[in-house]
Length: 423
View 1 (tube, one colour):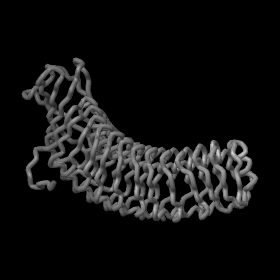
View 2 (cartoon, helix red, strand yellow):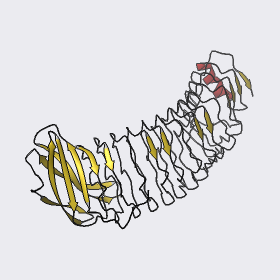
View 3 (cartoon, helix red, strand yellow):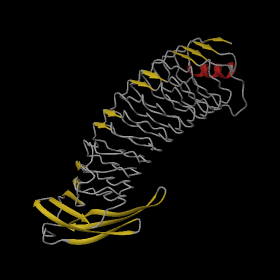
């Protein structure tokens, strides 16, 4: 939806508050600014609200401070019915930041910003963060063309069931970290109008959106994104995901990217360029319904840890390692732990010359019958493969040319079958 930039807006915000208790102090607004990275200065403004507090003829004046600038505003209350209050805010100037403006205003039930001028706002970080009872949010006329950070914009707005973001222009946004994190009631998100060409971080962007069933991201180009840590982690209702347009050329961190996406059945990442990725451990951990996983161009040359990468992928029947480069990998602890549907696994093309830790690597792979293991030299005491075949009770054939003594010990501990070795 295109915004009419010439439309005169009165710089007004209307909030509806639901309060059961009489004379309760509630947070109505914050002064906030980012002092240092990951450190914030927030001053809360509370009011004791009751039926006789204010009305339209009793306008109150106050101010907040944003980036050391004093912003004055007027506000008054209406009392339409028992337990219901309406606050109307009018700001005396255009804001250039709304950092934490309504953060933790947990009594808010709805917010109407359709008449609020956002033309100059660069920082919207945590603007509605932890508005845990917010059910309705009107962002009509929200102009975001100059906004550079949307970090945590809807952070833990866990009562919002829907969001219309068709007015958003994200061409200047650099930071989308935590943007929808904890939005546990949203069922679908259409971000078709989002342009992400300047975004550098999508860390935790949809983390724990556990009711989210569908998401449209057709224009997520992501050419500057470096961090996708836990981007979709905990999206346990998401049953499909089309990431065919993703450009991952500059991504360094994909840790836990799809962890706990327990409803995903297929995932095609064949377009992913992994040559600059350094962190991928837990990437598919606990994707319990995942049957088909396409990893086409997984050049993992910079990866040191692959621990728990496929752990608890209990439905996964095969994994293609044809493009994996594992020459620098040191840690494969629990890499295939509890992959109960895997029957055959061919790792013969992998270079495991740097591997140091592999304990429980195939633990509880209870259906695994055949394993083709790569050549690997005997190591000193730093090489830990303790319990590598824990509860691999179906394993009968292991093709291994070295390390037979260590592997035989592990098999003897946890496998009652007669295993044959091609040494």
